[in-house]
Length: 402
Image (cartoon, rainbow, N blue to C red; front, side, top):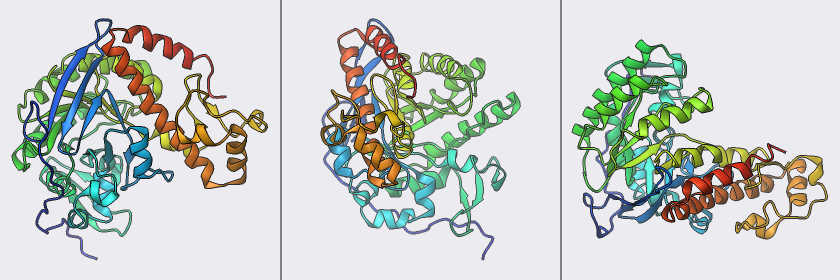
């Protein structure tokens, strides 16, 4: 086995083509802010792409390796009203590889989704490898957990790989410091993230067709966040900006404090994305801080582990009290699970080890997150978001996992 880091060398294919949509913004991509709630800083807008319009605020289901874990199909995503799906650069780089995806017409076509997509840069997954990855100012070298290949990922490669995937939005390469990191480590990550963003901006192609978001780091230090948001958001070449490095082990109230602090300093006219967050409570609080985009694996992960989210609090379907409960998961839900199966059946499937139980619960959870964002958008447009979110949070908190 060679110790030389490998990168793919095939020329970039042109993944998907479609006529640009009308409106402001560069080429195929554009963000339009429609309304800021008079009661709060919550925002309603839309992201325009060549492959669809995404109302905001929006929750992006996570298709880690080209599919939503738990058996959810592209058809299901369309039926629940998902506007945009996230693909994971790191995992797809290892298998099946960016060249194969480009040959198939891009990630959206390859996966059968055929709608708007965002790809992360792979940075978070690489840095989560810890001592298994060698990090320097140049980039990161790590070994594939699949076949042991030594792979190099840096700003330029992150751009090349993501452009082969053909998303509508791609993320700049960044370094995410762990929770509780020392200030000097956080400052190193900030310096690298800024330098890597500049390299991403220089290396990117097809500007206007594919948006590039810069990422703000700074840990849980408000002063460092202020410094970094000023650095990152000064880059005019970015079509949007993200808050990274939160919900990585810090207390929830600290997450909210830093999110609110950072979002308030970000440009009004560009999309704001809070990466890797979170629970329904997280989403409602952070929409109130002015966040437009979210992603998280919790809806599918919890569904696969027998848990369901509802507006009256979460359910643990394995609990014996559901043995003879013939009600749906949630009475007013429009998802296929609530229209088809009972809590009793779901508990039986779970106890019997049938994968269908986890699939039904995952479907319901993803529908729930989409419905949460639909209701949030309506409340923003009607200038009652603060009232609606407070009442909804109180209702969800009446019962813990049960």
